[in-house]
Length: 192
Image 1 (cartoon, helix red, strand yellow):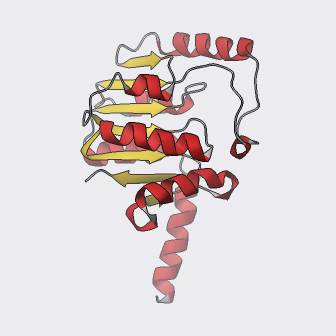
Image 2 (cartoon, helix red, strand yellow):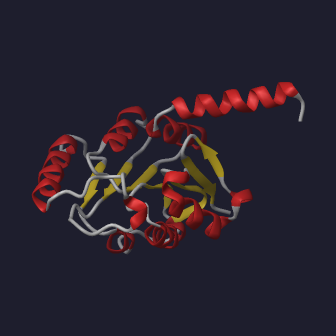
């Protein structure tokens, strides 16, 4: 590799780290003319809000989160403080209020597994996994949501970096390192 290509690669990596989740996902949506989007793991809805505000071509946006207290695996340390059920309930009410004026957004208060049953196979353009970052949960989410993505669509996920090694491990086992793209800390793959 010559020095120019190495510099371009480094600059591209630095640039991609400066982009938000929403900006990266928006580039996928616009480049591929996607019409529907599913986000698994909404929490306060910041990424979902960005997607809704910057992608008017989307006619269906689904946000999935159970909003319930549970014990997380060791991979979750530092990801999200373990909160009380009261806090989860309060965040859920704020998210419902935040998106109530947008008829294209549906907040689904279910687990990933429960919600996946509501979607037909090959029906979604883009699924973004940003829920429990433990190895088992990411592996389960990939297995649940990949069939829902249509051919030519994208399955993507968040926090692809060493702090959450379970994410990296699950993604590599599912697709292999050569079959994923990485931008910042988002991984993605096109469904063939």
